[in-house]
Length: 342
Image (cartoon, rainbow, N blue to C red; front, side, top):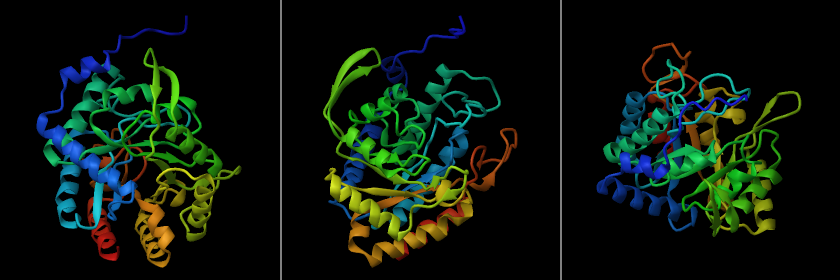
């Protein structure tokens, strides 16, 4: 048999009981959920920034980074709501390389998923309780969501997962905003079908149970650019791209139509330093077109303490070990300039 059963994974109830969120943290998370939900429902005109490292790889550095975001959040709170990216699962095109903290709580050691689950929960709890910011994570594995379901204020479905039926069905049971990225091919019908699936009710098997969901009306789109059949990257954040998406939204009559624009990935051709330029273009277009402003709720930004990227054994504190990111100084300046231009 090719499967080697390494260790049994504790249930989500066991992990939550072992590492509970405090009453203080619960109050912070509840209020943050209310604010973020109001933005997607059009009741709050503030702009969302989902910002943070490509992957969360070091607890100390990530909490340091999130605390920095907390300080600047207070400065721009009248115009911007910051949702830190704490991405604890990392999709790999071929399955090789660092797969995120849930696999390797220490990037320089072997996989240990029991300790990884504990590590990612502890990381998200610290962000809430010490920085006052509930965060975003990517749902790479639908079953893993149960270990963080009381902690997250935003969930993203990646370009490789958006066509997966289990991801779509699981999103339909969430009560927080959930972004569906366009697939790497750029086919917007795939993303819109995923949004529709997330917004309606379903019955399916989840974690050993037959479950029924009522649908998640806050399921929405994330535009991240695309790659053609020759491997060339193309953006889809320009004015004409978003106007076309708005038209498709109107034809389908989806609930709370919303767009988050991912500044990196194919939109920047992975040139992380281009993210500010793209952000400013998006802000200009929001001023130019009332519909653009109504639909485009925010941006997704890859940012960390040190700019660029390094190998797993690089040893530079606060520097990405996956995709390159903006450094803190550039990120801080970007947040302030976005607030000024809104």
